[in-house]
Length: 459
Length: 172
Image (cartoon, rainbow over all chains, first blue to last red; front, side):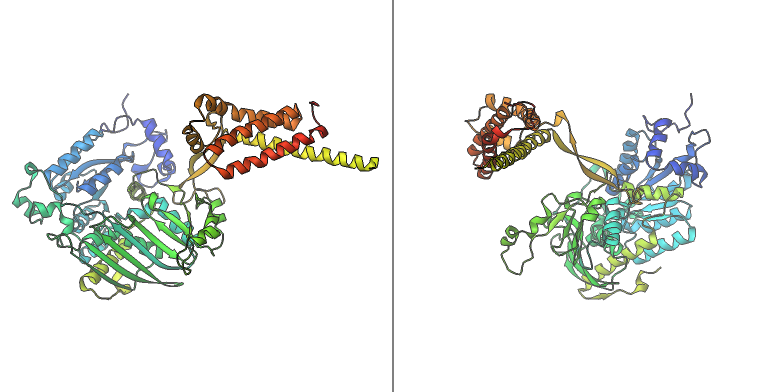
């Protein structure tokens, strides 16, 4: 009996299993109502082969592999082509996918891929930042939807061009700020901060990503690219190719690589952009890098209820200070968010209104230690200074993400292609965060106060 | 002392013992049942007040208490570990004690509530608490010892009042 699924469908995924998975993922309605023909089920219940999205991955480096792993967990999407200028990486991608049951075609560059691949609906772009805009714009103009990793570009002009191309072509362009599709972040923002107003007036925020010092990336000698090939794609040498994040013509440095995710959370949670930013930082440790290895910036946000200041620091020379998180501090409580649940907590100020209602709704989980402990005489006696506030009760966020952290954002992108969802981070929205990061970089480099106007964030 | 005063005192003692018997019975029964309880973490969709799933598709982890024979723990693991380190509490003594404790408390709770062999039940209950007291003294849990002493005092008082035992299935 012939199967309606393509021949290179992963082993073990038969039609029955596929339908079950789709239904469990909440796509049952999509199969019967979605407008694109390739997303519709046949009347007899079987599924058209076209219901599977064919996509390509451009850039099979570290981030590309993270996306590849996440896509492999989505049964309604199939990677059919990979693209990388480095044969070593694209061969890896090809073999890795083959082990997962997918025969994919490999290309050196996206031009060749676009010329030959006529049956793909979308492209994932995970190249070094300076290639994001050219690749994305070309793919959009070729009629494909694009999921592009952040930063959108290493230049403002590049990022702006992507927004314009998205608008001109009418294609979807999702930027990889994956926290925006993470249900843990969505519940924290929409339920705890907005609906419950749990924190009261937010007066401050701080976020950080502190990472231990590390050596530059190397490469197997036998896999080194020729000088001519590197220059063809804009790289000076193999070292800069492998360590492009540290060089100004390829990327934006730590504020861009690590900070962009978290600075985006400032904008998203505050639902606005900053008015000023001041910063400091420098290249203090790694002598051979161009970009700063640490930076500290302070943004000022004008919220409807008053001013809030947001401090951000990124350290690439020490992992001290509690890992990576984004923290919003209000008069009634503090929300400390992180993609890693172990860094996530919600702290209630002693004078805040009761949170029992939010525990009942499962928006919060009661503290493991009794909440009242913070109010006891014993707790007060632990103070070493009379002006010290007693230790706050720490609540848990009960929301769990049982998927790879990038998967919900990718699923949102694929669902948007099918017409069953709106993009959680379209390029014009991401551009605001892009500009917010560029302003911070400018503030650090000039060591002065930089003003941000609404026009800066518009395209 | 007039007859009516004596009758009132008897009635008071009877009711007093009844209340004490009921309290000790409930204390033993529920404590025994709780030894078969555990808490498990379950995941379920986050629902709004109308029962609709949250638009984020969030799944929440909820702590759910349940009872099963498999969950039986005579005493908390931390306490058990401490007892295991005590040379005066050899396992050939503690193991059967742990195995019987939950069932014994349930049985004693039922007999006390029904008024079955009340004196014997009270005496056995007292012996169990004395046995537990030995362990707590050895690991220097003075607060726990004092806590058990209150139970022992109540049991002793109940034994003293047991001649006023009424509403019981047996008279012994």
